[in-house]
Image (cartoon, rainbow, N blue to C red; front, side, top):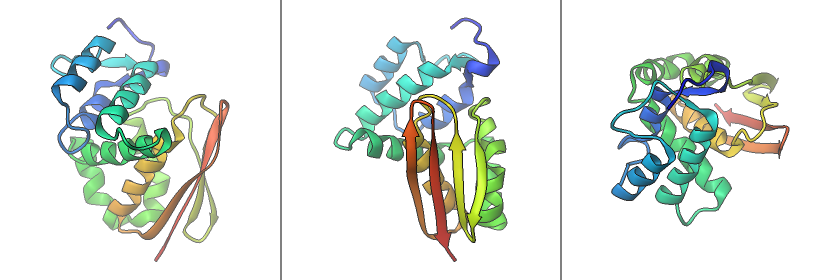
Length: 183
């Protein structure tokens, strides 16, 4: 894999978090398809193009959640990603601190944690009420349902009870996600 400009790249740790037993277990067929795409899990490059992450997420969805719709499958991949991420060194810090910080404080640290797995995701977070937030991004093809699944798992990690995460809008120009929880 050649040199990828940082503003269009995803670090190897993103693939390491997604494709692990606690995330998306890699079978022989999935491993072979990933390798055919250019992702050799036995010899990961330092960075990959964002387009390759998207293709890898689609493969993970088709292999791990073949009976789910595309949106529900991407949401499930997002939840699995957080499970794998929590096993990484940065994820261990998140897993340890999120319950102490609670959901409100953790929501505002999301851009920092997200930057450890995706260096260039433009994300805006706005409080819309008590325990209610709106996340938005103007990124094209951002995989909002993947992020919604990640947010569900993050809220659970924080100890949020009865949470909701809804992809409110999704278009070629970006997305908005509404989220919240009860006490």
